[in-house]
Image (spheres, rainbow, N blue to C red):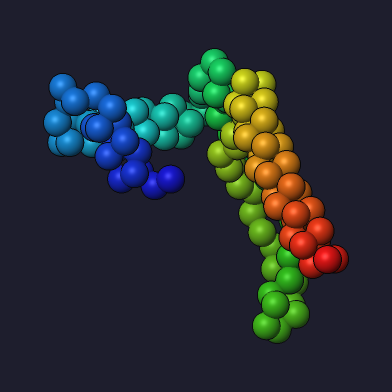
Length: 114
């Protein structure tokens, strides 16, 4: 799902909001989240997950072209940890998809065996 897909879905779901208002709301929320992470804060959305900043320590890497060693500096990177409800919802959905695929695969094997 892209940002524009999210805007379209929200605009359809909440008919009282114009497309422009929905776009502004999504932009405002995402900007607020990015700003909070940039300040080093943690974001927790109950039932969905949490966003935090992880520190990647400095390390020595290699230039793939020349093979020479390169020092890679420390980095702070955003990290998302899904909440229990999101993990369970995804697991149930993926489990159902696999069950459907297994049933279809079994039917195809049975038809081929005849």
